[in-house]
Image (cartoon, rainbow, N blue to C red; front, top):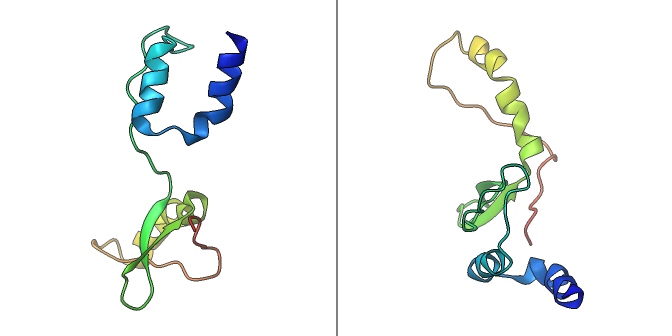
Length: 101
């Protein structure tokens, strides 16, 4: 029913992985492109995990768009290192913030 659909849709952010998978199977959700069945949901995090603090015991997360500069500039970084691997790169500044509080 429309009411049931609206109820599920309004609560979707609150579902756990198993409950979300159950809802996908219950409503026979399909890929809008291929029409194939959807796979079971899996945990996925687009954020970069890192350690915070002097001991590194606190976990923090970095936004991918702020960390991508190191990857985009990889060629320049390796040129600065005379083409030798391995090398380390660090990004310093206030661009990072803990996204999950």
